[in-house]
Amino acid sequence: MHRGKGMKFVGDSRIPAEQKANLPKDYSEYPGRTEAFWPNFLLKEWLVGSVFLIGFLILTAAHPSPLEQQADPTNAGYIPLPDWYFLFLYQFLKYQYAGGNFIVIGAIIIPSLAFGALLLAPFLDRGPVRRPSKRPISVGLMMLGFIATFWLTYEAVEHADYAERTEKYAVNVEAVEAEVNTEAPGYAIYEQNCMSCHGDQLQGQGNYPSLLDTAMSVEQIKDIARNGIGEMPAGVFKGSDEELQQLAEFIKAQGTEKKGSGTGDNL
Figure 1 (tube, rainbow, N blue to C red):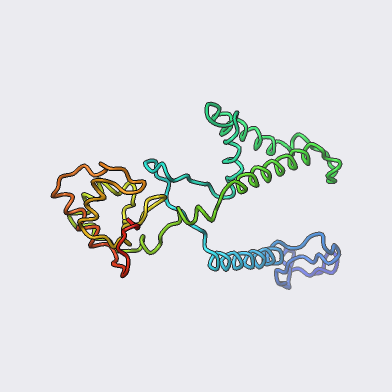
Figure 2 (spheres, rainbow, N blue to C red):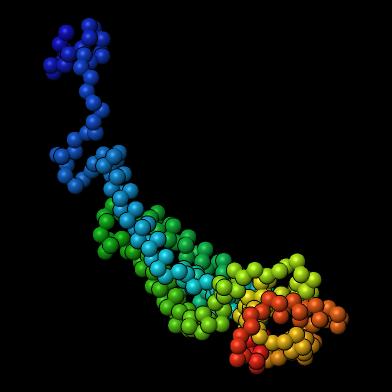
């Protein structure tokens, strides 16, 4: 039976006699305007995303992130610096009416107003025209946010000496990966007296050097623990003479002997 525009059906039903493949619609009449989401558009998106992902992985492998030590509230010598995407807020909090006694204004109120304005921009400027000159509210808010973020980030980077920070605060990977005997009796004493400054693996942090590189003798380590050296004040160690002996022997056992180094400046 033939009905309609030459369509052939089975009996009186609406079931076509000939099954055709489920092909996507032909959008050739509208070039550049639209296409089938699956698989055409999704395949393009997947390919572009894969290229960017591979490129990003190559960059991270070639230039690893310069890690710094973990923030330690007991170490006043370490000044943490946020990642680049938070530098604008970090710089903003340095200003008089955004930090200190006004920290709530700088950290919560003003950022909330700024991001809230960007979220409301499409509702404040609802014109149908897409030209930037015809949408002054949306474009103005976006440009203001971009300029403020760019300038604050630039100011933060300008006043940060990354080379000095790398020298002082960079994580000593070799020291962190070193195997320290945490079961030794001296480690418990070290944990009570030295860990807050020199790290849990003796790796050092901030202005406090690694103890894994010391070439000092046990007696020299004991003398420094009692009397201090450099920025380390006297009287830091509060234990007994027996505990001091165990501590010094523990540090000496974990240290690395260096030929020709007897000054002990690394401790």
